[in-house]
Length: 178
Image 1: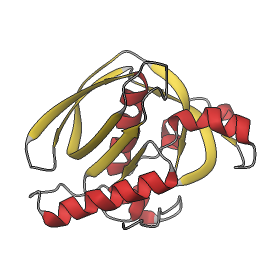
Image 2: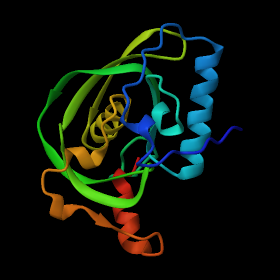
Image 3: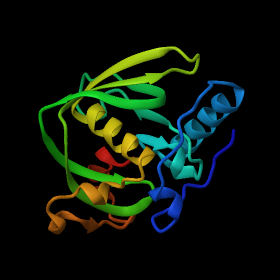
């Protein structure tokens, strides 16, 4: 198990564009395992390699079953070089970020996305997501381009700090923290 340190806002690596991964090899698969160990330890919904200081285009997404709504299936994805190839609709929802701990704000996102990526075997895959999955995919792909959720907020008055000790409010806001 290799839990890495999640870097926070102010670290210049969060604002840099990550490099494409040319070959899916053992080093990339180890990076994926580290991302999984780290996101699970942090109890996040997703994590991008730049958040652990590695400027490579790889993300993990972990949405437990029934997380957003009862009956929703769980989702666990490792996506290499992900890119949104189709998007539609609009949703606005509360987001947070493991790299900006305690801060949450209302962020507009596409309601539906199709993402093209490589899997851990180097095969091209497509993932379709709606609602929360679409939101998390967009959030994590933004990290690969040096964009943070606070950059997407349209109404700055929705940005607020929710201390960890405020359990009830923080739990409802965690729905989009990644």
